[in-house]
Length: 156
Image (cartoon, rainbow, N blue to C red; front, top):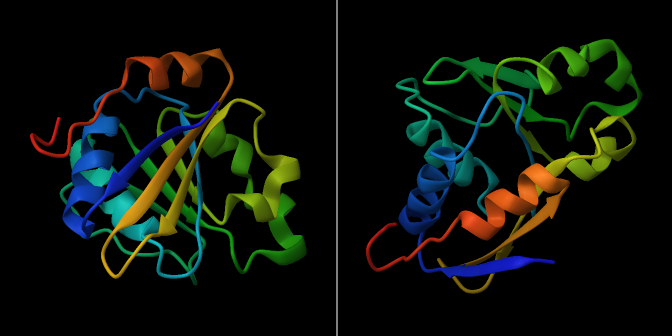
């Protein structure tokens, strides 16, 4: 089952992610999918704000993993350039650790991802508009999606 929202701007995408962050707990995994420029990093910036991260959040394209401190640690990964080296990264330490993992281009490492996760798909639906889909995998994420509601007019 997919849960879908239409978001009208980058700011709305960030507010959505900020609200979602309030429901996250240690070892949660968000697998981000979307074309280049679809808003994966924008989404992660809002998520970071919702987790209380005060640092500037940008794409870890060349560093692979960036760590941020907030209410919970945020592990922001961009695995686009990982290739065959995925096993050398020690991802299980992050996936099953004390923070929230956000993996951009997650489908590229599908075989090493935990089965339970929340897949977030961002699609361009206009110049600024985005279609956001949440695909829960596992009871934890199904319950999260059933309880989560975002109203763009109020930001809640």
